[in-house]
Length: 284
Length: 328
Image (tube, rainbow over all chains, first blue to last red; front, top):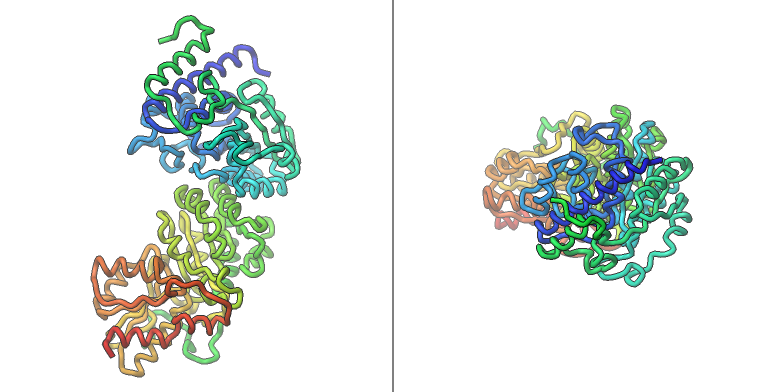
């Protein structure tokens, strides 16, 4: 169980991550906004509580593996890594610039701490399953997490991976699906319906949990439950609000793939810093 | 005459010389490499018997992973395993891997720069009766265009065995191309093999034309060289198993010596082995060339020998190309 203080601390990390996301997107002038903001709570939970990792030694053999499948939400990955100490937070402002280690979509060989290269959708779950299979062959204890989007459930490769992980009962694999219901062209259920997602994964021999992905406590509890399941891999369907933290863009799919302008950025930052008006003054 | 340093099979021109498909070299090579290195795993997509992945499976059942008919998963699961410390060999037909899963290979293996060995079976027109869908004629081009990728097209089953063992010891992604049909064993266990090194199979005293070949057509090139020598036309046959990185030094030295080059491959003329050689020759030592390959066509059903002849990939076509270059 998390103490109230621990929860507050994680929420504060999520706020810092959101702030950095806005700053880096404004500086980059392109990139994705809604997904990264929606996933900030889950990333805070991973990088500041769940993962066994060592930012000072990114290649530490015993570390858990976090594989980001939908690479386009990398601003939240970079911001989380920076705040966790993998590299200076100010480097986040180099996102998408020539020569930067922070590529528009993550490239493993450029930045220590990235587990893979991703962007083209539907490929992370099978890489995570491959790693989980290999670690189990060697009796290793690392846990493998795969973060994926709901939109990429439209990719055939995702289901090939789901079949493989189900067949092989990869209990050391936990997948988290960012169920934010949007994709570039609109709402997922209009573009190409995905439901019933939970039933589909259950039919593929997965243990499935559903959780509010913006509730850090609930999410951590779900991850703990997943670790207790031995005969199956677990999927956590995390219902998140795209654009979470900036009320004017929440659930607006137009914000899937565009960055805030400078003016919008200032407005968004103010809302995040004042916690939606809960604190009277912005800090610094 | 035959290059003695290549230590080729003594009865290389005998009509009853042994014929073995290069895919057998995959089977043997993975078993040998697997004995030497416990990190080696073999992944297959429901084709264990015909790819010869079964041979590894029998020896190391716990290190053989069956993916079912799912080539996209084949590539990406292998990528994940490589990142977890394994050296995966993935086996399917070249038409499906890298044909079906090219983007997965590009992103999660090549750009990601992980040590996955992609083994494309049943490549080329000599697949035979299965027809055009299964006759992969574009894989060399697709794979050699990818940064980080090494591309090897072994000449016979013995060389294929050596290529698999060498690939297992090489960091990073490697593509190895294998054939279905039984083809002559012209090399021996003593024939040198190094990734990135071409070997001279034949060299006449006054060579006027070079034949650069890859894959099992190197045997056809040898036959053509003998045919040309009977017409008193000297030639050099250079077997270039590694299409990428090319042995530029040897290729340019031979090109300078002969002043004329023919390339031959079981692949589209566009983008393949001949194109790779032409890129080098055009920049470094421009001389007349003839590129033999498939002329922008899909194949069809037929027996391997019939198809090779039909599409212009036999010794007679090499001889004709030499005549054309020599204005005979």
